[in-house]
Image (cartoon, rainbow, N blue to C red; front, side):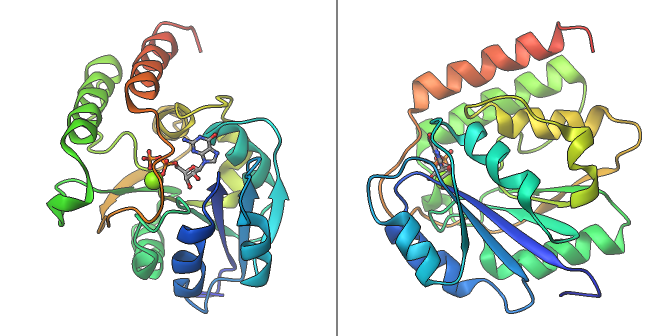
Length: 225
Ligand SMILES: Nc1nc2c(ncn2[C@@H]2O[C@H](COP(=O)(O)OP(=O)(O)O)[C@@H](O)[C@H]2O)c(=O)[nH]1
Ligand SMILES: [Mg+2]
């Protein structure tokens, strides 16, 4: 419980046994529930997660989006916080992000990684890919969102049914933010956070996923709502 609200953290994981050993123990005491979505891992992700006190949801359909769609609707907390299982997002700033949500009376906060506080935390091609996708989001949706691909969101769990994301893959990240931005009943903000170098092996197939994300933005822009 933090500032009178119950808090759930959701972490989608495909083979993140090493990352989880860093992430879960650093989660603040105020978090009521940790949900790890085991997305067909072939390592000990599920055992490590359970051993560290998380509730594990299994999702057999592969993909970042499929994993989130399995985990997000199961939360019991009034506020949902998301992050990767690889130690990149700032567990140490979870409470600060919730403060930003509550103090500004927002419904959805996306944690913004740019400008990077640690330039080593992201390689050059990912920096370029992120910039291209963020500029595309600006041009297509006329919204100056600084980090369209951030995987750390802090939102009031009650709005989840209105966000209703559909993507099974990486585009779910931009989809959920665009849904929040476009909904006149949802207030959206970005909050600048730290971003750290990854623990464990990269899961992103950067050229393929980058192109799929760009195509998805185009499709979303030109599909009637
Ligand atoms: N790429 C990918 N990540 C997945 C999948 N299922 C779950 N994940 C998790 O989603 C998070 C994001 O993936 P990651 O490789 O860190 O992508 P990046 O942060 O965009 O470089 C990690 O915690 C992954 O373990 C999947 O099928 N593909
Ligand atoms: Mg990551």
